[in-house]
Length: 285
Ligand SMILES: [Zn+2]
Image (cartoon, rainbow, N blue to C red; front, side):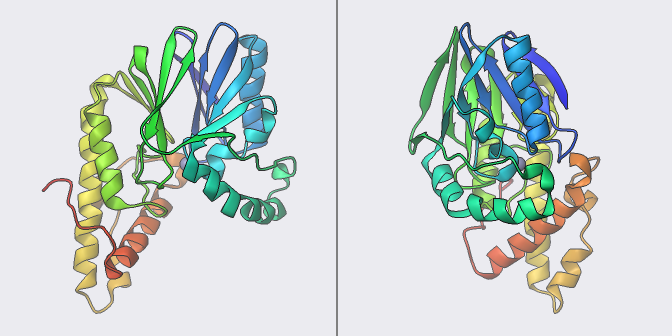
């Protein structure tokens, strides 16, 4: 696991085991806030070790940016903490996580000690503010990767923990392409110092404009290719030939998963456009 100090009392962690998934810590004088957990107990426990022994603090709040396993299955390792999320995150975890954990446990014995802990404190509309020492955290919806997505802005530092609404490769299979385009654009206008992506590396201030442009170009490109596919006799064969480089993306690593995510994006968007779902607004139009 990689660890970095992003600014005073703000730390970042990145998995070396699964898809470069990230988590963050904002430390106060008496307790700490953890933003997401990592995919495996091993790495989540390393974060806990760091907070308890290096910082000398306990975690009082765990914020879940969305319900997916790689961000929430470590909740159980902070039994004294209040888990905070969007109300839909709680709902999705209740409906889906328990069953998918049972399946995952059969394939991966390392998950044996994991239990699903649902969020205790949720919000639906607007923002939720959480004060940690001298810093104000602003939680607000950031959808598109999933409909329960939220981001966490460390207001004083202009650092945004974006969850998976901002990734090196936008991923829309469980979300909506228009919503993710809107989230990416909004993040680009926030005047940030850093974007902490839900996966991958931290985007620095000087890199934000290019990262936003590249992500919007990717969204336009997959939409364009799906439109072409819809007119073909063998649409899926056409889509299988569309490489990630033809969609304005290269050198995306994500622990080796980028190509798979790209394939899933094309298939999911094809299905959504075939069913005439809400997919029509082009971010560059
Ligand atoms: Zn994720």
